[in-house]
Amino acid sequence: MKKRNSKKLVVLVFVFLLTTSIAFAQEDREGCKDHPMFTRMPNFYIGNCKEKDFDKAEFVDEKDKDIKVEGKFYWTEYEIKKGIKAPSELQILRNYENAIKKIGGVVVNESGGLAYLKLIKAGKTYWVIVFPRGNGTYYELTIVEKAEMAQEVVADAKSLMSDIQTRGHASVYGIHFDFDKANIKPESEPAIKEIAKLLQENKGLKLYVIGHTDNVGTIDYNMKLSKLRADAVMKELVTKYKISSERLKAFGVGSLAPVTSNKTDDGRAQNRRVELVEQ
Image (cartoon, rainbow, N blue to C red; front, side, top):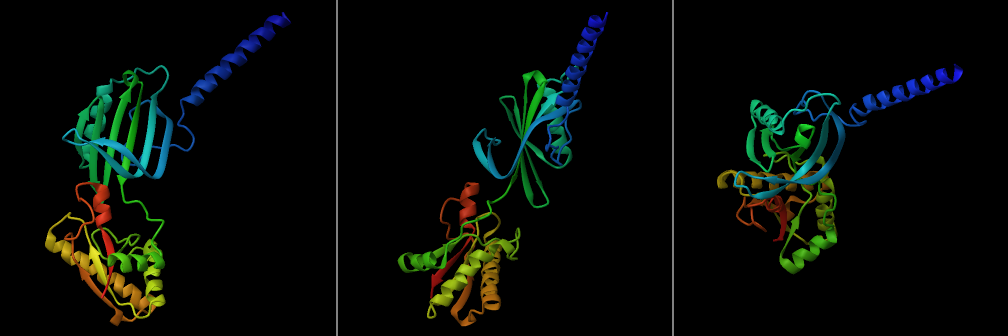
């Protein structure tokens, strides 16, 4: 009798552990959460996720052309809960397509069982990929908040001087402005500090500070914006680093002197820059 009871107890413990593990497995993975842009499909939980400050995803545009989108990266994998009837893969796609439209976004493309969505809001561009799989039992959601990579390595004073002497000019990356404005962001300080060091170490050097933009927007607007940004850099050098204003002159040339094609995101990022030219 005792042996039977022991066996029953073992079976009950096993069943309890099994059901507990199943229930636990159907909870969101620790550290994972929904992106604030979307709610999830009903009766799904997060099985896995990934978030990176800067990464890229393969996207398909309206002309079926593959493009790479870079920026803040979110990837979430949703799985249907046990015992729940899964929606169709098409149902998952349509739910997210309708959701993006309701908040002002668009469906860019739908091909190969994937939906490619896009939203421009509050000065930011979001690219979304919805990828249902397993007959609707799970799906992947990829969201990239498009952005330029924070420039962590900037040219030093020595290399700037070398470029000026050998090429006649030096491109300075790492100077960042607020979107569509001439306000210099705090993370630009290392780059501007190196320009100041260049001028401090070469007392006779006089420079043109030249602002450049990409070709997004009208030429007249970009000419004005590039000049305002060059003025802002010059002002920072004069007020914060005590460089004589007589050694600096600011100009803006808009998109008239690109270093590469403006047809790609990477190209436009390279064209938005400040250059130093010896007077």
